[in-house]
Image (cartoon, rainbow, N blue to C red):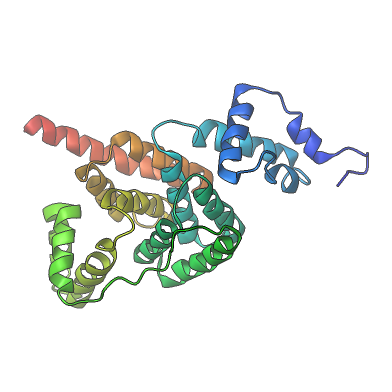
Length: 280
């Protein structure tokens, strides 16, 4: 496609100064797309070549290329956030494919969307699974994403054990605060969220908490829960660097206000941990 003046918009994107940011970003984007010449240079540059350049320089050169998270962590966090937001289906499909390209399994992606039901609801997860079905059809692989885990009794006891492992005494206290107004909701949190979802195989607990941080940050409507999940992530062995990098990653997909609010929550939890360490 050419403009009226005969110029090719993709040339404008590719003729941007060959600085480190652009080259680093292009290398990262190639890793995600698996293509030597990512289609993003064509589809976006046709109408907004500067946006194509910024996406490469900032989104991939500045953010995606940062140390602190593995490519797999970045892609799973991104697809979790996009699934929860529910307003960017083309980008969700793009990043599902990107997750596969950087080594995530189809099972991990499906489990990510099942996990999303807890924070964004079933419609968001079902729509995300519809997008995954399309991408999987174009990316055949040996791993089978279709897993039916056994349904057995003891959901409450199993969930309570998982709740204690993830959230410690704080989680149990939060559930107890519902006894006087919505005791069944408290029971559902224990049985479904922790007994059904958190106990599933396919994702380890640290990864589940990383995804919860990404989702709660992107949604921007769950500040108390974000603090709970940052605290749980650290309790399970996650690092402060991983927390900050996940929040920074969300700036590109949910905007800077969401990321900044997430940093405020993280600062509170880090300060709390430092105080507890001093007290100990």
